[in-house]
Length: 116
Image 1: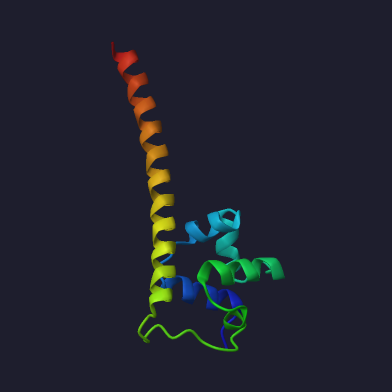
Image 2 (image 1 turned 30 degrees about the vertical axis):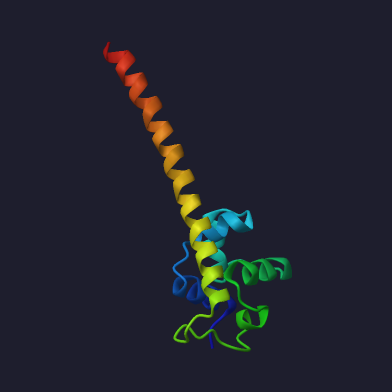
């Protein structure tokens, strides 16, 4: 029988969501999140509820009382929820890339001044 952490990882992977995105949504670091999936850290009730909200599944699914069925045809509402998560995920990626670009631009400006 799968642990809660394993169930969370499976659902996250089925939905194509990165660990970094969920960690950010939960307000924790990626390494802390990774340990939660590996059951190295204990999950509080608050975190379980937050997981269920982010993954859009009932808490009972995280306890293994029922299973998600990814082979069924998504309803319009499920598709809408999936698209919202994907958009949030893309926004997080864009924000990260924007920060990296700004950092590189600063580095290039400094190199230009040194070489000048």
